[in-house]
Amino acid sequence: MLIHKEFSIEEIRTKLVDGIRNYFKGCNINNAVLGLSGGIDSAVVAALAVEALGKEKVHGIMLPSEFSTMHSIQDAVDLAENLGISYNVISISEIYHKFMRSLDEVFKDKREWSVAEENLQARIRGTILMAYSNKFNALLLNTSNKSELCTGYGTLYGDLAGAIMVLADLYKGDVYELAYDINKEGEIIPISTITKAPSAELRPNQKDSDSLPDYDILDTILYAVNEQGKTFKQLEEEGFSIQILNRVKSLVGKSSFKIHQIPPILNISNAPVVYKEKCLL
Image (cartoon, rainbow, N blue to C red; front, side, top):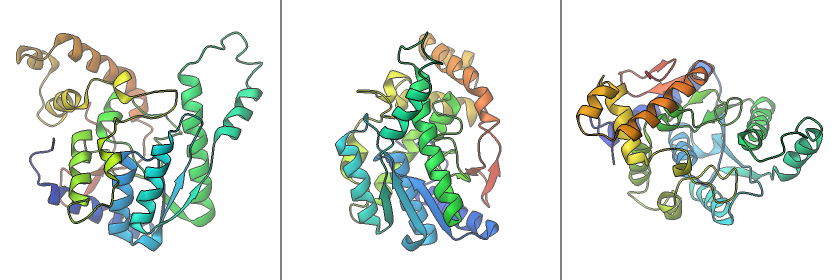
């Protein structure tokens, strides 16, 4: 479902493609790199980057861990081959376990699984992507969306790293609509990427819905607050669940420290495309 209904999906796509192209031109850099997870966000960013820069200028890196599913790895490979871009597959499992062994003495009194283990995986991935970026003079494209960004569903110095945040002014619903638009003349993004439940795959059987309200509800609330200027009190009066509103408000509040450390955002809300510092929340 398109959340930014003030624009057509064609307008959004054009703004993002032009924004990527202009940003790279302004940096005087031709090449891009991004992590390909097999998820919809990285798939959409890869497709937009190819449209903006050309397939020979975009490189994907797949960074599976022991928690990555085979279908996600295959989806990432299929995407790269559909787009005609070069790619590498680098397992982070051995690196992750070396880190954990090094941290064994530090973590000895707190060995239960926590967000620390999840974030470590994301930061390993970010380090590898930035190493490629430095070595080959390629800007790292961030793939986080606005739904995640506003609720803090991302790891500083991990999946929030990058030279430019391509989707960070789009809600999850907008990303799905872009995927459908990209596929309108043939399957570029694998159908299974679009239909499967979103997951960071940082622990067994993880789903985004474990940490966030359903995106249909979350996006509607965030859009009402960000773009329409409504308060949570107004939304409660309109009939939204007070439990869900309180949950979203809590997520937004806890994530505020991350917002000050994110890369530039491609903003679709103004013409020409400009970059803003943070989510309005």
